Image (cartoon, rainbow, N blue to C red):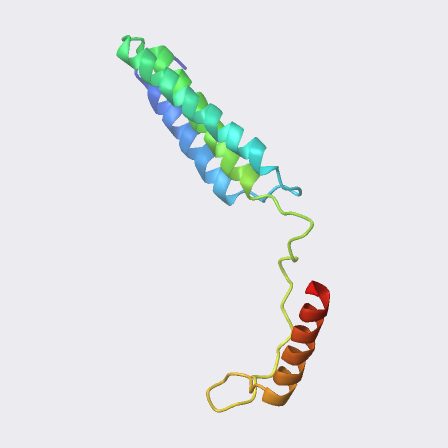
Length: 132
């Protein structure tokens, strides 16, 4: 198979679209990546875009296309890595237990004013004793 001079652009476009789709649809990584690492990865991708722009302005179209492709791959990798799960996240099949609705006509919990008053007086007495 002989590749025509303009066919490489089509091939790169197809590969880049596949990379972007896979970064969104492929199973997420098992571990989360630190936010700082993701920020550096995205910054690297954006830097590659800038270098590609400079190459395009210098009429180096092949180099610009390859550097732009590398930037897109880098950002697609960052998207995929950002989907990683953290050990502190609840599992995907986790459903919180159903809680009964709070009492009260408007759906809000009724406030026990006597309990509030006694807790407030105890707090005020503690505060005064601590500052004296």
